[in-house]
Image 1 (cartoon, one colour):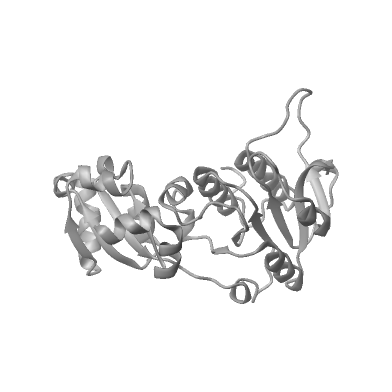
Image 2 (cartoon, rainbow, N blue to C red):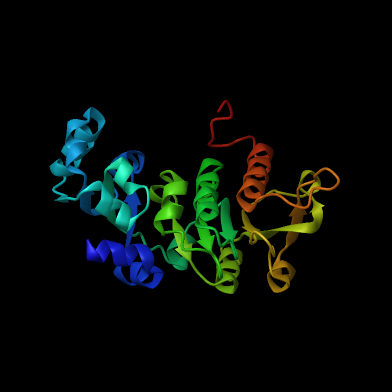
Length: 261
């Protein structure tokens, strides 16, 4: 319990231990479906009496996952909201390095700089996964993508999408070495509908208030913006990323995606 509480509040501790927390039945199903490395399960004893919960517990038991029974109030004390769901998992964190990520030629990846809200980071991971991105790079000043709020907002993307925390310069260099062009979201860029979006791309989006730093924008091969109605200052970062990713996917004929969805 103490370890879980420490990991919840301490980003450095999560990174050092190579662990993260995921709570809720949906995330448990995603973790099981993707064969994530589940280390331990903290469980409300009442969960076994729920048909859906009982099935998840049976799958965890079949895998030999250590199970600790914990009252809902204590689960909430670790991660707010976990008590209502009755299940919190401690999971080993994948640690893809840049060399491993770009060992194969990627068609699309997403980078985030200064995205400070964990919910936005998680939703960004979810959108990246949905629109065919092969990786998410979390650059400087971005909230920990493996904090429980980000994992919760990702709705399972963390189990299917390689995610790495790296410096933006190293990330851009690795992407370029992998044959990718850098596309920066920029309010002063050209309209996305007019941009050349062919070939492998690393799409980089900036923080909720300040956007991307000038030094990063200057390193980009292309700057794009989303046309908006007069008087509209900007979109939420995860909304903007979803729009940009959709346009990239549309230009590519939704290759590998279900265009009916």
